[in-house]
Image (tube, rainbow, N blue to C red; front, side, top):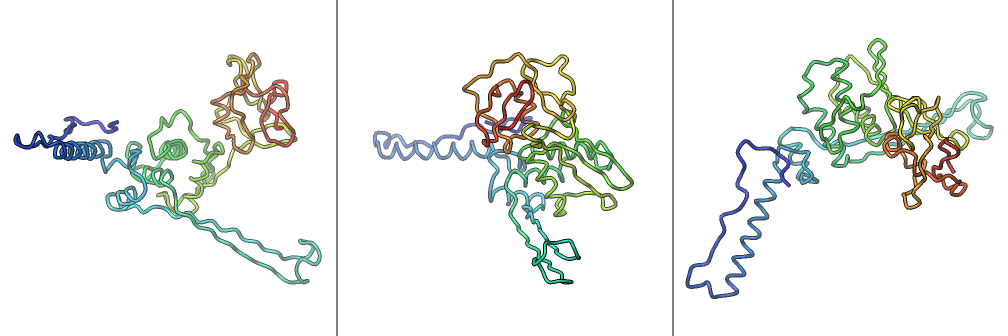
Length: 299
């Protein structure tokens, strides 16, 4: 698989090695030459498939990605750190016998982890993508955020398909987007100062995630969810004033894999639809999604 386009195609096959005429009848030597040619072809195929400047290639991973990111582009693999702090103080703010009267307790714990290849490539694309221009504006910001959230392994993304919602108040930009792995990574990278961003502005994040509201699946904002069942295909899901509902008309496939509340993101359910959700409660406490008379419920 060749993932880069060339005006002139590179050499696709090696010039094979061969034995002199007097040694052609030696099976051992012929096997050695055949093996040498096979290995040489493998090296050539790899170089054709993995142009070193194209870090989004699936063949660019691990230490090789580090070498390219740092050596070619000068961007190190990110370290993602998070801190949790606890402060106990104030009269009538904590249960009795928790801390001494008129005392204060403070603790902080921090964790740090090396970003995986996927996040590293998204960070590289944030810094290196030139198609949006270099002038900061609302469209630039929407494109950057949409590409980071949806472009797995730093790949390009048709940004107009899933633009995030951004509200502006003074110098603060509030971004609202679906709860996804990419959006969580964006927040972590921004908090750690890993993304180039104008210093005079500040980003705030609002996560639009599924909520278990008494056994009913709800979503705070519709964003790209339809807000009416009109014109939707049977089995489609839609945002019914916060409640996620299913358009009737599909018989669930019993062989379809189950969907669980803690593992299902809003874009995933929107793409899959609710046609294969079971009509009966699959078991209390399992957390599996099911179709309760047109409303997506949580077992």
